[in-house]
Length: 348
Image (cartoon, rainbow, N blue to C red; front, side, top):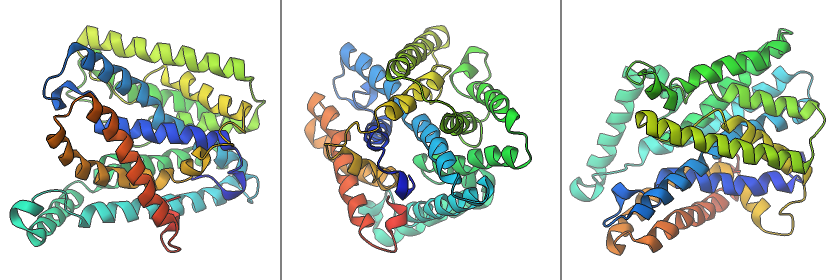
């Protein structure tokens, strides 16, 4: 999703590889005891460690998007003009992936045949669209698509405040939305709000602050690598303390965002900016440019490969190889899609 003239910041693309692999780990759930035949206590802790660590991924995408949006906006008459281009591009990608997930059946093919499975799947999608149109537009019809719509909404809110000369309110409004968002996530269980609070993962609740921090980072002086890594370490520790305390206090599941997520992702962005050539001698930056395609297609791949897990016993080797195989195959598909002129925009 980076502007072409900015893709020489190799460190950004390198970290995007780890971020998208983290997204895949969240969705494939390696070492999840409920998905293993004979899980051990070590598997339980490994699952929590991997799942908790991986939560930096989408927030990282938000903050990096804000940074590059600010840089690229300098070449346009106004941020609003740049945002329209962003909204069209991301909106088309959203429509493309929603359409694919709508027409490709996910189950019942073997039992009832392709025609029945396709008809049933389309019926479910259309019912969702008709009965809950706003939720459909915000979250899409598959788990990862919510990020694309949330990026449009969050960036749009930031640009709106800039356009009406209220940029001083961006961070305060972002903080307010973020705190509200937390009470729709893990903190909802602490205050017995889980039954009444909506899912705040989608929309402007978390993306606005992170996008704004990325935007602000493009205008202010960069921080040193040492300070950036300190942000990362402190943010990581705070996030895990939150996860553990919420689990102990109210048995809250591991959610997408915490207070510690903010310094963690802020530090990752500035660490990358402090060492822009990080990864330049490897193939990782090239893989990082395929992140959009991998993000879109990996659930298809995961569903297909997951059937093989039943044949392996789902032991430790499978738990390690499954997410890596999903990433590898998804990258190959994304690379193929990026070579097709009319589809390139949806894959890189």
